[in-house]
Amino acid sequence: MDKHIERRATPWLDKPLIFSGNYREYECMFNETSQCEYQEGYWRFWYEADHRYALPTVALFLASILMFALVYVAGSLTPRRVQQTRSVTKIKALYRYLSYRTLRIPTLDWNSAPIGLLALAAVGTVFFFAMTLGPKPYYWPNTDEVDYGSSPPIATRTGWMALACLPFVIATSSKTNFITLVTGVSHERLQTCHRWISYAFFVLSLIHTFPFIIYNIDKGMMVDMWKATVFYWTGVVALIAQAWLTFASWGPLRSLCYEWFKFAHFVAALVFVLFLFFHCDATLTAWDYFAATGVLFSLSWLYRQTRIYFEHGISHHAELTLASNGFIRVSVPTKATWTVAQHYFIRFMGLGPHALTLHPFTACSLPPRDTRSGFSESELVFFIRPRGGFTARLAHYTELKTNTKMRVLLDGPYGGVDATAIGDSQRMLVIAGGSGAGWILPFITAYLDRQLRAGPLADGGSPGSLKVILVTRDVLTTTWFEEEVQHLLKSRSEAPTSGLEVGIYYTGSEENQENPTEAGQFSKTLDHPEKASQPTHAPAMPISDTDDGQKTTPSLKPSIRHFKSRPDLTVKVEEEAGAGQSLGVFVCGPLSIQSDVSTAVAREQFRIAKRGAGDILLHLEHFSWA
Image (cartoon, one colour):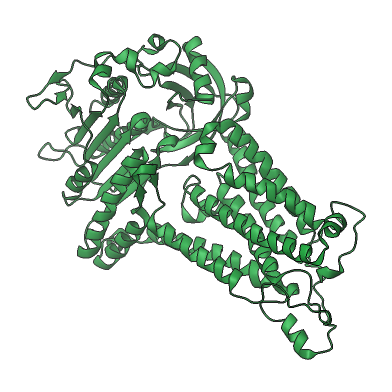
């Protein structure tokens, strides 16, 4: 056992790169049979610890993935008539309730993960606690006559469970991964699982570390073990890197300087994996988990690079302009295809060191109907809110070089809304806040395209409805958004629009409304906001007051209303759900908006489960992805 560790001549590796679970053969040297049986107990035997603890951990993760994969496959293959039966409707509503219902702490502006995911996390927590604290002993009952070994059993088992987390931490961090392939869950939604598995990994690593320190200090061997073996100093280096990866990824710290976070995260991850590899030193099947991790990472990386350089190529040039509200408009002519709410990672090659980084932005356009086969060129448009760091630099670059072009590399598309979710929803409710305004535009485009395909009903009505709600504190964004909506309507003037309603809710102050150019929330981030006041499309039409104090644009067929208040989103969801038709609710905005809407939709799912009829779908997109 590890009590026979010898001094190494090489400080890094003392064994060849083999994956055969070496030195598993063991012969008990105790005189008493009972002592041998105790040492070789099912949960105690050091030479089988990888099988007893690492493999069940892998099974836990794979079982969770399999569960979601079965749900995904069932939802894709089950005929619609079966899905509309009472029993299936109830099951689907309960599943969606668990997927949508979240908890919120307003004072911290914090939303929990859905309660279904919290329940899954609770199962994982119970598993790790049971596997760590259930088997006994925690330390070997060594005496002067009997020495079972120098590796505390609690440290051994937590070490193997921690190592089994490694492939899944890497898999859930990748933009393209097998989990997304089999479950349909996009990479950005897997980030919650990535963080949680990383937390479990770190806690297990700590529990693995401290018993060795306690044991060796108690025996007076700590200094000798540090000098004599590869395990201790490599483990400390790996643990320090892991601590950085865990704590520096906390949201507020990550937001302080996202570019530095990405660089430091990558370097720390490389150091961690490398020194963890040295630390494991071919113990039993330890290196098998590194092989699995390497395969998953390599396939993901190669697939992404293939898409970037062979599917999209290196010849794309983006035109950069400033919208009337200070957003950066990035337009890329491309033959690529994408769907509603999908995002790309973009590498801007003309921004010096920033050319080394990729940044995610949601597409705010759709390819024309006749170009979605991918053979004709279409315009891929992004509206980027200038904030700090990279986006601030991009804004200043665009401000100084109006209508400039820059070479870009595209990686994507990723995520988005399932096309069937839009096609199957008789009614759609799209809600966004602030910089999520551009995220709304593809929904309007998709709705108008659907209306063109369906045509008007016999009575002149619309075969479907779309209600749009934009909530913003920036008065320039209200004007800009209306310009963009008008532009879409003009480009599809033949589409029936009687079912389209647009509500723009201005929540800023009256003073800002009277001086929009000076008070623009986004344009004032530029040095010279007046340079950002050139409209992208035709100017907005005059706005007139209605009798109830709302404002409408009289020349448009659809209803576009302006409000000077916050919408009651719970009521809006209830009104749409009460129509008795299939409903799709799509949200991009601050956490408060997401919480209000998800809670309201979850409540409707509970009602559907009770009566066995109805269909309401919710898609949430985090504010920062728009």
